[in-house]
Length: 165
Image (tube, rainbow, N blue to C red; front, side, top):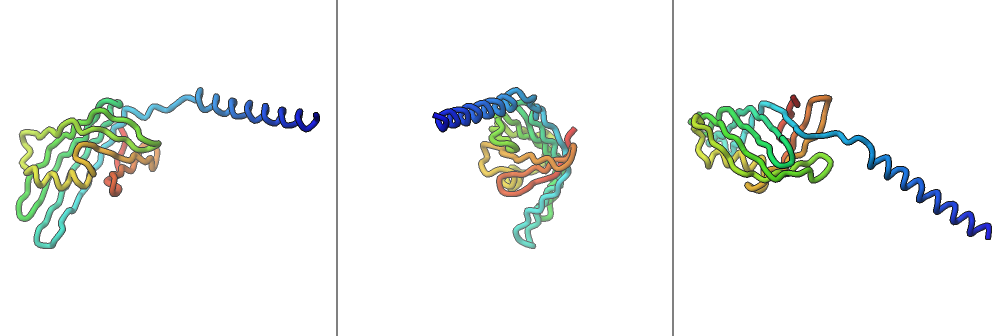
């Protein structure tokens, strides 16, 4: 009888502790990660051979406005071969969600080309393949490095460090 009482007391205590910690986690104030806005300047050297230079010097403005919308602005200069062009595109995002503790996945709704953009689509697509695995989705890891500094990573590698504002 004493063993039965000890067993019941242990089980009851374990259930109460489990409920207590679950309650703390449930009622704990959750930090709102959105909206997330950060900007950075990056240089992507996508040259595969010495005879064909392909470089992107771009400022990037990443904005996850809410789970339903966001965008990535890419503005700068592209050098491919002996040509230099202007890049000014906005990747409009929709239907997003946080798929784990630091990874966001958004559907690429459309890519908007500005009137002053002179970069051919096939050259821009080289940069797009570095950022995404699938041209229909943008999946980025957002790792906090410092108070307002974040390391942004794509599916294959880290892309840039940006300052949240």
